[in-house]
Amino acid sequence: MVTILLLFFIILLLIYLKLKYFTLRGPIPGLSPHLIFGNLIQSGLLLGKRPTSQVYIVLKKRFGDIYQYWLGFMHFVVVHDIDDVQYIFTHRNIYDQGQIFLERFSILFPESSKFKRHGAVTMPLFRRSKIISNINLIIDATDRLLDRWRARSSEQVHTDIIEQCQNLLLEIFGLIAFDYDLEIFDGNDSRNKNEMAKALLDIMSTFKMAIYAPIFVSVIYMKLSRQYKQAKATVERYLNKIVEQELAESPELREQRKKTSLIASLISSLQTDEADEARKKEEDRKGKVYLCKF
Image 1 (cartoon, rainbow, N blue to C red):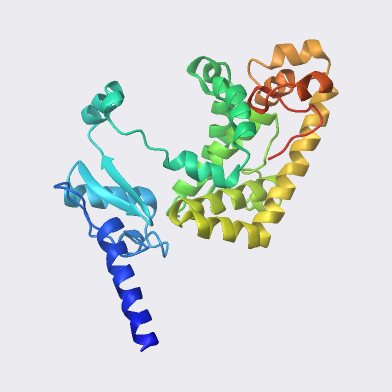
Image 2: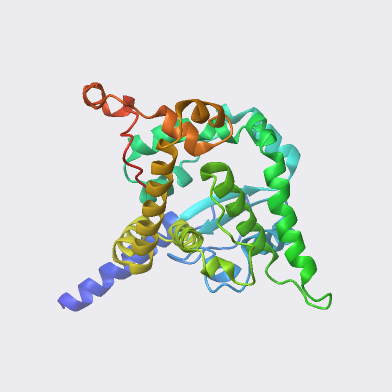
């Protein structure tokens, strides 16, 4: 009798979850989501049958410029038309502001106050004026990727363009942020030779999983994943070395470089008086000069 009641309760719970969280909402079209997985199975993302970009192209052809989409537990309303996007950003005060990616980042960076401090320092470096000052660096990195493509046989079909473009962005970020060459495009399989690059790619892969999975699953996975722990430790070790090298530079040189270098800007913003820092509130602290915590 107890078993039957328990089974009945589980069935009711699943029905409730399906109706409450995994059902199309309102008149906006979309694929009817599966329980827990959302549209991950239907779209082919879960098994890697399609890249994310191709999924959105297919859904746009089927449902038009606006449709509903579930990434696991996360519900999205996807908008393609550029005029609609512009209107939404112009009138963002009348639309719900999604906190999904902030919530997901908090899984990787649980110490939110430190994350906000780092963000306050790093975000200005990605403004248009700062990007322009690094345009030659960006062009050089892009040319290296194009040279690698040209070196391949003209009969070869490029099936990894999306991955290569992601690697290009990672290479550019490493150069701008840390003055560090990840050597992603040096040689045929260089990303496996550079320990830092491989660790960053592993962390990016983990974050992709964290986006799709429920938060509690992501937290458990990262606590148990040996690969993620090793990657995180590797990145922390390299960043600490980069910080030490930057601290060895003269203040004058660092002052000149902080306009275009994230690491120079970060080091310049850190506190030098530990006693004074300890008296501040957590949200007002800048961080210690000898610690670079990923």
